Amino acid sequence: MESVIIATKNKGKAKEFEKLFLPKGLVVKTLLDYAEIEDVEETGSTFEENAILKAETIANNLGVRVIADDSGLEIDALEGRPGVYSARYAGSEKNDENNIDKVLDELQGVPESERTARFCCALAMAEPGKETLTVFGTCEGRILNERRGTNGFGYDPIFYVETEGKAMAELASDEKNKISHRANAIRKLDDLLQKRGESHE
Ligand SMILES: O=P(O)(O)OP(=O)(O)OP(=O)(O)OC[C@H]1O[C@@H](n2cnc3c(O)ncnc32)[C@H](O)[C@@H]1O
Ligand SMILES: [Mg+2]
Image 1 (cartoon, rainbow, N blue to C red):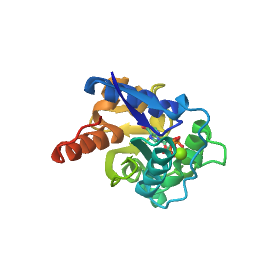
Image 2: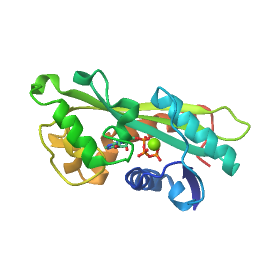
Image 3: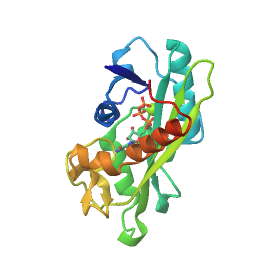
């Protein structure tokens, strides 16, 4: 089977990409398969900039086409935070549980109607000698007062999806993969490639 390289070390993302690309007949490889590759510093101020940084650095390093995902949670009552700092919101160690606690603390006393938020996902596809493509997907929701569900990763237990009537972490993976920011971004990438008469190979 053909393969696609995703420049991520996040196990939660890796699992989702595997399931999202399998129906396209593509096996996913991630940086978890290339332990020797060092982390790319995410110095950009937007999801797009960071996705491009990760994709181009790893594509040049490996000499092949690579897709990178930079994603996170934008909370309106926090002026868009944690945003590009989502992975390390509660400190320099990446810790999903501490990140959730920090968000819940900051939103204490904020009423339901003002707890609107969205997950964002920028994907960049880079290949040495070619123009880098970027796409952007979102998923609207609101922040719960406490955790619900154990599926998914990151902020999924406190992100309520109105259209599903469930927290993201209460959705089965195939349900999340229909409506997520990541799924929406992949659909846009597929459309862009199709318009250009290209494919993922
Ligand atoms: O950079 P890579 O290696 O891909 O892994 P990362 O975990 O550092 O990923 P990001 O820099 O894109 O940071 C995104 C953070 O946003 C959160 N996040 C992204 N997508 C999410 C999702 O689908 N569900 C819940 N949280 C998500 C999660 O906490 C991630 O750590
Ligand atoms: Mg990162």
